[in-house]
Image (cartoon, rainbow, N blue to C red; front, side):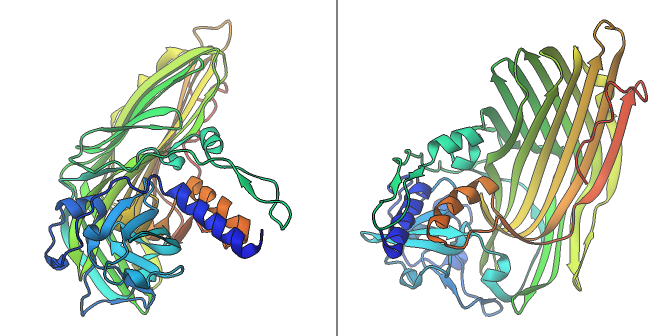
Length: 495
């Protein structure tokens, strides 16, 4: 099989893999000629697929950006991961799309075109990540007093990146043989994939399954996640929340000549951290898992200089157990206030955090630790809450961001034969990451690049970020009794 033919085969495989179902999520209403500038950000089409961009005299797009007309009305369906879009091939300027161009159909459908296939009157467009300066060349975007209320929950269904690593390897088609003139490339059948569910208004709990964990996320009095694991003799249940009250955001983004000249993002609301957990083992195995929650909450903002923007809140959990015995239990909870506001500024090539710290312990984690340890029971849980302001659709995000990472490590133990000599150790760390750029989850990148590598296409980078190293907001460690070697010194997170 020649290189050109192989490229076409792999391109088709890539599209088929990312396209969960070509006919799913359909809504074949005509494109229409409604004025997109007057579109309600909470209209059915805008909620389902995002608002349309509108040309504005005070903003200049990059020359390779294609503004596909019709917005959400031109979209037929989208895969659960947000990467492959079925659009009306007759929509204004859809015919200008080509690999290498930037498709901008809605605020949720923005990306570099990796592949494009025609199917009847429709185009199947697979997109990759872009930075906001890949889209905008010149313009000043700003808005104050963005109330974080009336959220819309977007679910990714069951994307490949929400599986455990073992499940993903089993689900992906695996090539065998070798590419060449005499030996054809053989691929296992592609697994059927569900479609992206419709969005849900409100911040109530939305449940999902991630890497063998049952999870739930909500956005009511904070960004909260629950997680539950019960397999092969190991049980773990927990909740983690970044709490806030009546939060609001301000932002400013100045782009000149395709470069960020000034950027500011501030989120107020009186932030705190709350968490609880219970874990036990009975002849089970230790667990190490990363849980990219396939649900995000979006606050539609309408358009700024014709650019559809949203403030999106997403969450990730990392869980690592270090149970030193085959039998044991541990449980605990804690809560503390953290800061009045979170944010950063960028100007003259320099970043600076803008965090009004206000740490006050409300409930002590170390005093709450309980359990029946035989040896040492160790547990490390990290909860990340990310605020993105710009374009966003799960793995493809471009704009300003601020992420709060709270990690708490706990150990509890007793030496065998000495049930009264119990030690408890706690380490807590809170870090902030911020900047301007895009991120795409590494498991998704690995899936895409697995196919692209077959024809020597340059792999997709997992991030394109302008930003400083993480900023430490708070860090503390405590062991009772002090200096007890059995419990050691817990490390909540790496600097």
